[in-house]
Length: 114
Length: 110
Image (cartoon, rainbow over all chains, first blue to last red; front, side):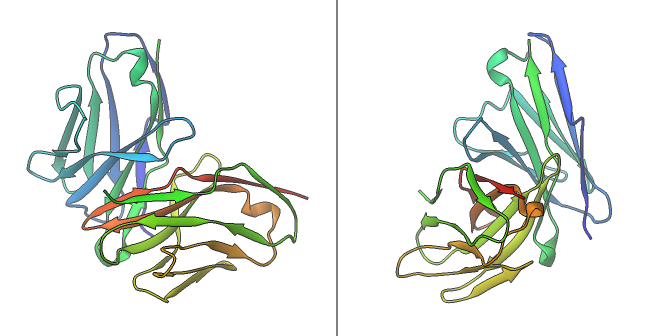
């Protein structure tokens, strides 16, 4: 079946540094990918829609300059958390739209900013 | 805006017990409805879905019926197993976006 690989699964970084999270569709091409953020005991909140070859569409309240999204190929989207702060610590999940097969999710990335 | 509300967990049951996880939604029109499951250390997997009113989605012994009168999509299973321990998310689709509930952690005791 369709597989989405998300890397890294866990990352710890220092405040002020940037962290890049990768989301790859392994056996299908995805023109559209999605990035979610999950706070403890809360639902997954859609952050942005990543479109191959064009700018991402951000949800209201999500800082574009803080969360940089690049979707340079049909199988890879990246989320870069820039100048990370402790409040950016969270669980980030990507998903890729696979046409009639629906949405396939990555296994998530636990980001801890210290 | 559109939203999904599901019962808070954790839910702890003994093996072979009957399971219900409640889910209601708020949306204009008739969105597609989903249940996703997240096993420990893994990504979200689609468990079942229903695309129109009165549809019943089913998979792995789980069922959910799209009820437009009550705007609900409750998840049920007649006899749970330890391997069903996971977090379950109710969700709806609006255009190309998935809107999730908060998730319900299910813990099944042997």
